[in-house]
Amino acid sequence: MPRRKSTFKDRFIQVIQLSIEEDSCREVSDIGHRRTYLTDRLGMPLVETVTGPDMKTPKEVAEVAEILRRLARSTGKVRTGIGAARQDVNVSVTGGTRIEIKGVPRIPLIPLLTYNEAMRQWNLLRLRDELNRRGVTKETFATVTTDVTRLLKKTRFQPITSAILAGMKVLCVSLKGFKGLLRWETQTDTYFSREISDRVRVISCLTTLPNIIHSDSPSETIASSEWNTLKKAVNASEDDTIVLVWGDEQDAKSGAAEIIIRAKEATIGIPSETRQALRDGTNGFERILPGADRMYPDTDLPPKKITPERIAKIREGLPVPIWEREAKYRSIGVPNEHIEKLAMSPFAKMFEKAIDELKIDLRFASRVLIEFPARLKKEHLPIKQITPEIFNSLFTLLSEGKIVKSCLYFILRESLVSGKPVEEIVQPLSKPEEIKEVVIRSIEKLKTLNIRKPERTNTILMGMIMDQLRFRASGSEVEKVMNEILGGM
Image (cartoon, rainbow, N blue to C red; front, side, top):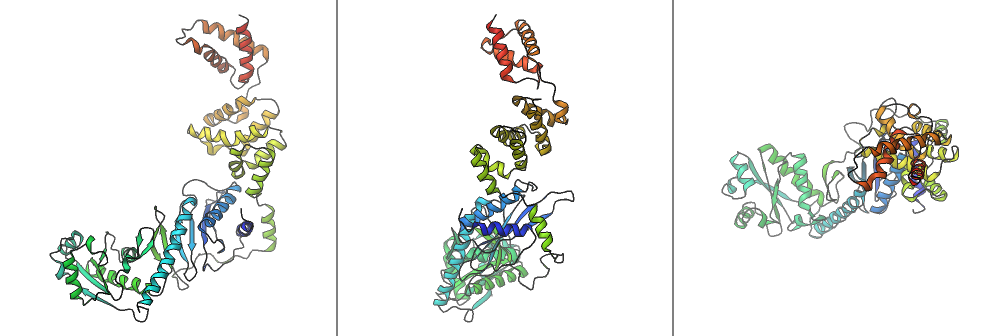
């Protein structure tokens, strides 16, 4: 990772220490609120992690989100899975403003969402410059709103026809000097008209789409002759664009007002908004971003002073950073496929105890801690009941020679099925004489059976023997005795 990633790690640690500073989010990208649910005895509190405005590229934004995810996982106290965490990604470009993309559900979506938002802001700035070049500024912006319901009574455009039959109004907003600009591309396959439509949908509650049509796309809506009639009626010139909105009288007026507001904002630049992430990697309007005059404070709790003593105490209990764990595991020979998962696992401390204190083979220990829960999950067993204490009992029994490696999975499985502690499931290991007796007895019983597939005889015999020596002998040991007896017959 780039060297300056350490500043992100330091900032996250400061957040854990509850020493959070507010930073300007202008002209950069940042991850606004990474929400991670921590489980404790008191319930499930919400933790919001706020970074500084330090990321410069879409890829870097995702990399920092991944660092935060892995740091949170390294505590061993977070809930994981879909919906456990969401990212609010703040984006701005030079000359732009902070835009908050709310609730991004998956980190892999962040680069495309960030890229499209940056592109949207650049294109809105270019649109402003084009309007200014045409002489349309905040001061010169002009518009006319006209009721054109009567003129469209015979239109074949179904949404307007249905609205008029339902007694609704159709209003026409003439945007002076905007010709062609509602087809100005803002995001991938998304145009400025979408900015207006979203505002009308959210604020004016005209949620049935389409909720507006405009003369920059005449072929997709009403007839060309009807557009010409409307332009003459509202005295629109060739340099103007006209926009239609329909609904009950109050909503239609509100929709027309929103068209005007959003069009005027285009002469200024980029309005501050909260936007929602869409599946295709673009984003849509959600609400106006509240400013200092918001109706409610950001939290209903008063600030709490954090003393240096408390910070020092918290620092002492912080987990080892994941990247340090990964480096250590890689250096001691942990299998590559286990390194990242083990570094984030709540069983990381158990792994280190197993290999350092109990002298368990590190490859076997990592396989037990990572692969066994995954296998048990596929069997729909309650793996959430597996605790570090259960693994500690298993590894301790293994190190004391009271169980064998090949039985460990089945003992763990039996514990989950029965709800019994592993100590109650474990039985004394079989001695060689007992194994030999069980093998001979099983061979005699096998002779009385009708085996339809003779090639599976040894497999069936092995199963019969292991069923009797449940958890008390290793498969390799049993197979050796079985082959010796069969070979002597």
